[in-house]
Image 1 (cartoon, rainbow, N blue to C red):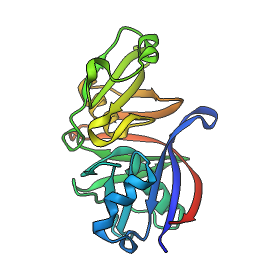
Image 2: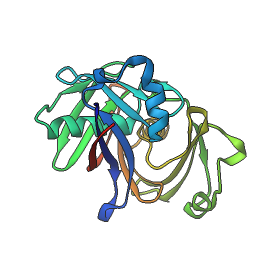
Image 3: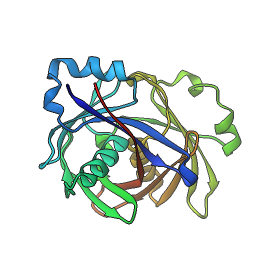
Image 4: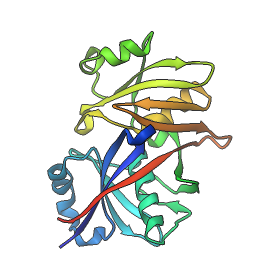
Length: 222
């Protein structure tokens, strides 16, 4: 019976927020043809199937589709493997090699903006306008609504809606953070969802590094 790890990724101050993530460290125990149905059944915004833990090879599924790259699944999986004694230097989703590093209780990964889904970036005038949204603005099906909380300090309020990939609203979206930091061209701290926190910094090689804190929730048989 496959063992499922449930984590919270991009946990904010005081343990707030954090996007739930399912990870099968022994992903080969779940037949490839069943993985999409398993991800839909679990209902997390993403579920990871690790195919080779030592080499960081993995696959990522939303409830509706497979993704070549996604932020919170990679950050969470890197943290989980390290907690089990496998502190990999890179993960290898279908998009390509993703460098990993650890600093205190934070886990960081680096990805290329073009690997991420093509989110619309919808700038609003204030955090209050972002908070007041009752759904995707103008019926966008893959969009991040954002506003500066403190532009000088690089603090941003974000909500991400992604019905196109089977996620109505995401609690914390690393792939969107990669694209937004690239568009803004600067280091930002993102406050997303109900209290999640994402750090994002563009790098000179065209990648964006994102990081945050992960907490375990439970381990159970599936």
